[in-house]
Image (cartoon, rainbow over all chains, first blue to last red; front, side, top):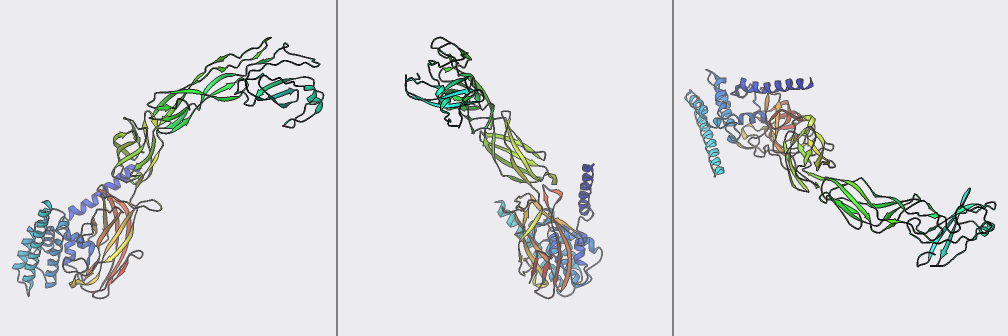
Length: 148
Length: 437
């Protein structure tokens, strides 16, 4: 009987983790918490690590979080770009090779650059695109050296 | 009288109610008279303080060498008779052979370990009830189990199993028989004696390397000892599956211990080796359960640029640490656990909830590879913002072993994190994590 109870608890434990991933595969809640924070957004290291592991999935989460909305303010755009940067800040920490290819990220940045943004917002978007490209290029170069 | 050298004999006079001992020195072929009447009359105590009461008129006399039964003597007795009232034999002799009536190998059965020794003796039992060691020649069978020194009887264990030891007395020994009455000089009969003994040689276990392993892992181990033979098996307890047993030599066995991944597997397990049908002594193998994390150091990561380590210049409120932990087991005092398959995992009551492996991260020290001393880094640790803030949350750390969840709970940090200005921050768990900048 004791074994059965433990097994059931274990099975539920597993289910909980699986549910978390399957119900939010693009970490929409996580990226949304960074973008939509009122007041002073605090970047906790634990959440930053989670973003670092998303890679291209962060762009999908951002797209799903934004929906048809456009960034309401320069601050919101900054937060979106900050999330993109954090998602590619540590390419070796990204969970899957697929997410190291910034395909959705490129589409998101292209979409943002087409918006009627004020000030140097377009330049920030472009800087972010360059940053992501450089991060991935450096990672690939590093990997190539390690393979040799 | 006696053999060709002087001897000191002991004459013991027995009577109803006591005895009296009288040393008697004799040169070879010499003759001594023993006047019992004079002894009784003088009332001089012997070495033990005994006297023969004046009223004693009847008794027996026994003559023995200084080595008691373990000495063959040839003696002729001429009875000097003074006022004899009663005699139980003829005029010449009344005696017997105080020789051996049985022999045995002692100690038998015996138990030794391979490489160990045991001194054996061929012991003769006298008709008088006394015992003495006999010089003997020794042999063993099979010699693959134990050898014996042919002269001394010292047995040395070679391999696990059963052994038979045979001892044969080196010379003819007098045989003990009952009272003899002869009218002439007589000799005790003699014979050579043999006896066998049996022994068990057990395998010996001296060490297990490593002496401990992490729960839920497969640990290659080397057992050192003696008396190991092909076909040897290892017993290690219900929570440890033993596989890949290989007898490298009579002194070394290698194997793999696969430890069950459950809290019940933790603790000390007795390990024994069975070889040649014999079980060895046991040695402990300790199964470690990750039980706690000790903070070794907490370093403040300096402010960096984008992708740097600490807070960024644009969000320089708060504090970020590089925490160095040491994973400890359940013992008291706790011992470090070093195992590369152990994965630190964290959950936190943030929104959304955090449920992830602690490493890797943007800080290169953060890896799952545990150092030899069981240390690893949780970095970055803290938080930053672009303005003053204060927040609190609870972080629970578990150690995942073999990818199995839930892991083993090792620590809870109730964190308070705040900043009162640019370039400032403080973080505390109220106990061993307290840092400010």
